[in-house]
Length: 171
Image (cartoon, rainbow, N blue to C red; front, side):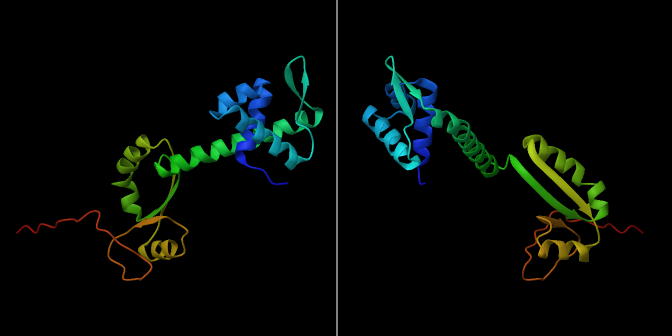
């Protein structure tokens, strides 16, 4: 069975409205285009989707059984689309950070609180450890980023200076 998303949308709209004219209006297409979508969908599922009763289109028993699954698929696709948008906007997802223990308690809490305030759909895992271990985790893709002291020349890693400390020697 092959069908298109637009056919599922037309079928769902038909179940909600009971009218091809209203299906066309809901999908912002012509009435013949709406009829064609429903006809093609009916052929792909190999049964009649509706019957006419008193000027209304009423779902067949097979269609009534199929409707909850079609609605679940459409809701899932809507959720997937929203998730994709949120990930594109960096407002959803999970960020895994490995860092030095001192950094985890000094600078990172303030930075993370600002980051998370702007992105309430993002969650963070923070794992403090020593530099060698952090490097292993990043190379192994167990964590998304690592914060450590020093510089690594490993070809799989890219580093950026985040904080440069100054040292003052007094007599």
